[in-house]
Length: 468
Ligand code: DUC
Ligand code: ZN
Ligand code: ZN
Image (tube, rainbow, N blue to C red; front, top):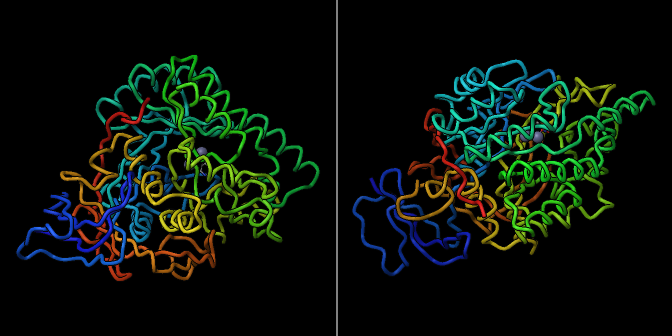
């Protein structure tokens, strides 16, 4: 069974050139300059004239069905992976969770049970470690060796929920150094933040904007610096800072990278476009829609300018979504009268490719970096390359046809995520996902979904191939 994507411009992490892409079964068979494409009898043809052909995007930070903040993230693996596919994402790496007091194998089994048979696109797992102790440290080895999980998220925030103290972090980093895995860090000083939250509530400051005001940039930067130091003490353990939002934290990552350290970071579209004042500070309780951690930053400081620069210089290597959707009604509303009870999270798995393409249109990012930060680097960073993240013979045929002349209007009325609002309501993007192919199967064409749940397979991952 052949599929030929014809007449398009292939964009890779190194540039753009006209090429036809031939798919045989689930894999890419070859790329051909347009005048040398061999005739293939009976091939299904996808017309990509005037369009970009890019590797399916890889979102390495999602939280489907995460129990959090007294409720659960509203996208299931089924709804969330369908929405992802609509937006050009063909692989996710979700966070399986060991809750404090739970055993890692039990947490992992629970995550497999949620995802198995329900996904529309391929998926892997990182593991959140909610309790670093002798048993969980041992389990890290077996996850790397036997389960295809080569990255572990720790939290310097959320005391009493996922929080690890510095000693626990150091021990987990030492283990990761020994077994070759990556430590992913939620870098915010949660102990200090909890003091600020208590003081704000005592003053009667309960509106959503206080979520951001009690999580100052300096407490993200301090935790980022501390994580970098601990990783150094552990023996240059590979460290990946998740959802980086503040200039000061980026400065710390850049300084570490300048000395040759294996320190990496991602940011997310919400930090590139949305702000503390305009969204979190919306009138009444409206701002709850944008409560996430790390928080949106002030538009009066140069965070967004610096994040775009970081994407260009590779101090920010990846754009992921931290997709963690909660409905406004009944979920975000848990925090009426107390901002600290608003479930933390923004849904965006459907919009990352479009939102970042807007950066290309605006001259903030090159086409090649668009593909690199959305697909190629995430696949390399988390042990999925070259199966994912690249259009090359032998790679999985995960392919997106992107129409630079199309337009996308983001709205709750048209999105496919299981949310009753959109964080980007009314945004108009120059560019549009035209067709989405996963392992040779057309999932999306002409705005119509042709996939089925269960198509998506679990991806055991190898070690990172991105280390210095
Ligand atoms: N941040 C969020 O906004 N939601 C889920 C967990 C996290 O770290
Ligand atoms: Zn986090
Ligand atoms: Zn997250």
